[in-house]
Length: 102
Image 1: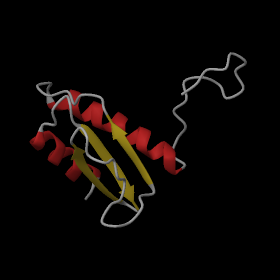
Image 2 (image 1 turned 90 degrees about the vertical axis):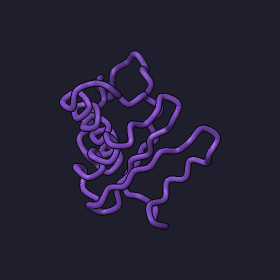
Image 3 (image 1 turned 30 degrees about the vertical axis):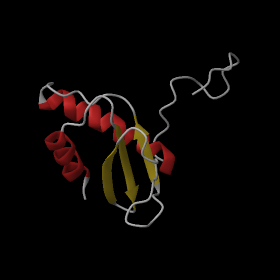
Image 4 (image 1 turned 90 degrees about the horizontal axis):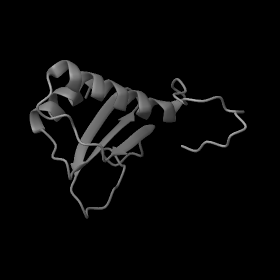
């Protein structure tokens, strides 16, 4: 699936606030699924370990217009991509002496 395919599928599914959203990528193909509370959080995509992935417990912005949902999704994918040498999304300098944590 492409990012657009994943976005369209998530919007059509309307994940609930108690559901966990999994988004992952193997190569250039993305996959997603909803993990119900209590289900094991397994990150495989078609039997392959993903290059980058994320389990999100943040409620999908159901009811928001598509631009807001797309911005939410784009931010989620950007976080996923940081795991595969994508742009660093740290909000502070690495050598900051205050010891912030992720």
